[in-house]
Length: 183
Image (spheres, rainbow, N blue to C red):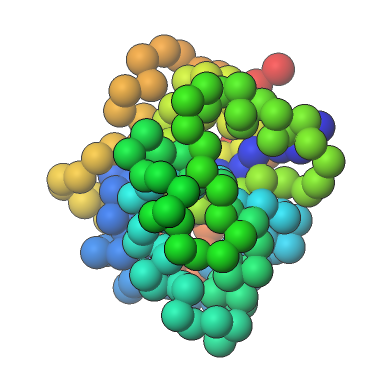
């Protein structure tokens, strides 16, 4: 069975919304290497509507100009949305997941393939955690209190035990932490 693995940037106070506003100063080659490693183990992307729209605008025009753009442009993308329709998905190799979202994602996990990567999409990640569909949560925790913005675990509504499987401290002060579901 395939796993679903999310990767997010987060502030010390749990803000995961719009990290582009505050994470740039902490970007490093170490962080790039970790992201490249996770992408190499993946063959599908799962994301929410807002992340899809932002990523399409940012990455689609870049073609293969950098590794992240090449991965996103060359990998099948699944978009969870109740407001988009197939006609609004203009990024090649993109499918819409709507209706029975949990059932559709379970079927994706049961299909052959590598890891399904969730880049960003904090609302979707919280929902996947609450629905017991997320297998791995990789966080790059910035040494910064953002003060405002949607926090990653807002709305989860229940206790979810996790096990730390990997951690490292980057030279920029960022803490990389990978968690799996406990048990």
